[in-house]
Length: 135
Image 1 (cartoon, helix red, strand yellow):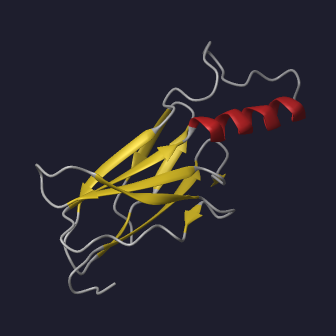
Image 2 (cartoon, rainbow, N blue to C red):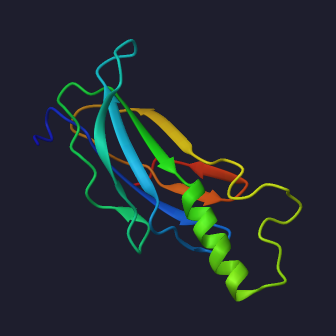
């Protein structure tokens, strides 16, 4: 991958409800080469114990937009089960009749320019999320 003609992307997830990295979240990467171009699925990965995806696919030359899709529902369902096993009396999702996460998936789309690295962290909890361009 030439850094002069392509951009690169990385991400990590912090579960702000527990103040820890979110491990085991599936992340898919797609790219397009212009506002009106079709999305090209590039593959994906899953977050490690530090909440990071260290092996996302490289972006094709000419990429102008990137989409990261985070499948967070399975993570929260697994986390709920761990919590329920540890605290049998504690409600999994306070004040909610839902199971899992209010947002079962998070899709983040952003513009890129050749030669730059884009680190896009996801701050996550069962009822909301925030993203930003990191370093």
